[in-house]
Length: 387
Image (cartoon, rainbow, N blue to C red; front, top):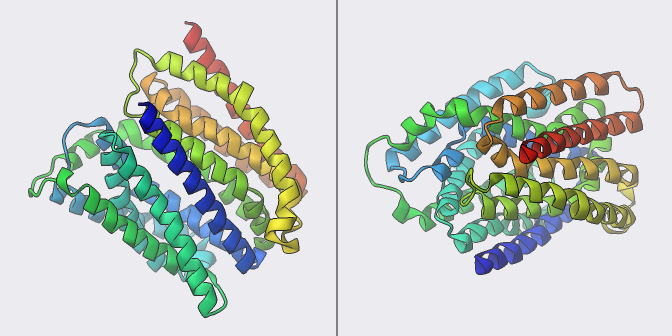
């Protein structure tokens, strides 16, 4: 186990550096408004993909059987159909003008992401940490290389970045399938697809709400900020986001395959105390350093990002708590409370932010609501642990 933790942590740090490098390159080569529009497109693709895959990866992690080739093909077809439905819904919203020229990106991204998630789930279930972290590290590395390549050919645009993302996703999907090729049965039968459909009501509502909550700052921020202001916000959270990615991936990789009802309360308790007494002070120091580094690293065109560092960073910290504990929430049988709280937080965010006048007050409202959710779940978990 110690060797597994060492491998996961070291490669997570490498992934952190790659993600930071990718964010730095994008900030340097794109103007703030394009950086903001790109972030919205990426957030929408993550949400659509999460809705479309029906939590298949989580169900595979919990199951013992391996998927068949027909399972993978049927899953891809189902995810594309669901993605088309979600895109039709977005077409009648305020995002219509932004996504109108990029439907092709979503329809290609969905099956590629589905394939990669299934492969990662198989590696995670069988605790093949070396292969798992290798798959996760290839994507940001390819992104950085391709983005720099596009930038040397001509001025970097949103289109060039999206094409590089799709190329990276395609290579990662092919490579991940190659790694798990022995785990996929070459049979024309449906094993996992039936299991996924029968367990949608258990896993999928929480998965969708968790993803929606994690991208809520981008969805709400894009509606209350201009493209340039939102680009500054994205740059402000680049460093905190890289750190939280490492925390989430490491914690979930280690805990998810071994978690059970016998030790769940101890795990929750230690997570709570770690986040409050260790994680939060360290994160505040990180935010202070980020505030100082932003103008030096990303350039003067992102000078507005200074104040947003603290608000966006704290919001990300509370999202870490939510993501890591969502697995334990399922084990504790608290799905109903989780769904109710998440829906309440989303509605409160939308309502309060729509009636606040200034940029600073809107961002502070958002940070307060995430803080409120963190405190709520802390007391819920603490009461459950003491009982």
